[in-house]
Image 1 (tube, rainbow over the protein chains, first blue to last red):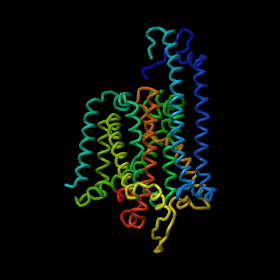
Image 2 (tube, chains in turn brown, yellow):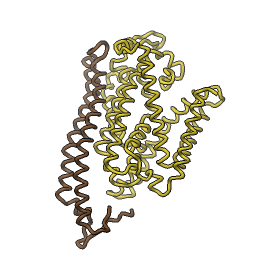
Image 3 (cartoon, rainbow over the protein chains, first blue to last red):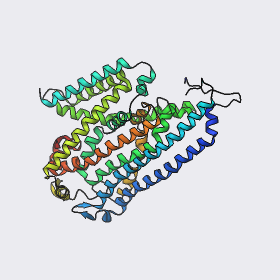
Image 4 (tube, rainbow over the protein chains, first blue to last red):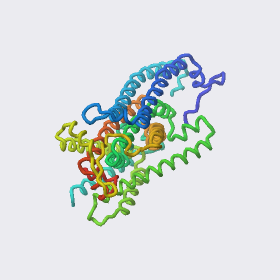
Length: 117
Length: 323
């Protein structure tokens, strides 16, 4: 909208230059290293629940503590799995923020004074 | 005037006051559609949780667990795990795009016209189905609350609908955010209290509670049946039960990332970091809430009993009847 990309003499925008730069590529791959495995892990862990409950109901019905069975405990563990991944991601995210702030500062410094945001 | 009616009217008064306050402050598109992007992470997180833990969960999940035991709890699990999809792939890019709607974000990268048409269609479809469920829930609750005052179910549904329109049209995102925050806090407090009361009924002994779930008796076609409600399979029976479960799982964990009323909240925060932190706030609340559905649902199954609920309003009334 109001933030029309500014072009320099070579017709490139700040965005193009940042997107092609090494630090930005590094940021993207740093993010991928966390996000892709985390995503596949939680999807796998989650779908183990319906698969086991659906195809191995006898096994899941085995009692662990009093009347509490494996199915309920595994379901409960999903909550903690979700919380743990979220906590790890927040930790990793601080790192992403640091790198991206560095990139933005770098662009702002090499840019004309009017190039804010 | 009964105490519950008074509380209800008080809630409407407070939320309308917030709407009025927000309407005074809103100027311009960013203020109206995105609360000036000044919502703090905890505020946004609580509001997301409030949006999410709606009538469908409080009434619906408690009802399914009360009737079909463990299989109902499967919904609870998926509903939280779904937020990992939102956290890992949706929230931050959406915020960084700096737009107002999902369509704006997608149109930015693709052909605008077809994208906007599809996004509008999807939003209306999702919202319509969601709204029907919410209105049924809200109408049932309000009718129960105002029993004896001459206001029936139909009037309750229309009244609730009008209130929603007032909140959104006059208050914009700022008002709806605060209304959701209040709702989330009330709902958490209510659920916590009910859970404690359920445990008190079992003398705060988990063994006793889970033992009782082990033999829930009810009448099915005139026969008395005793079932272990912790066993899977009461709802999803072979041969297609397992497939149903997988399909439910897919719908839950990827579907949440497409809910318009959740996505729209990520435009109200100042930056990606806040968006990320707000998802974590939401996950903390939502997770706690859905773990407590164990107490609501199984509590209703064991203390109130399926027979009583069936004759007093059906599955959706499990939690209110437990209260």
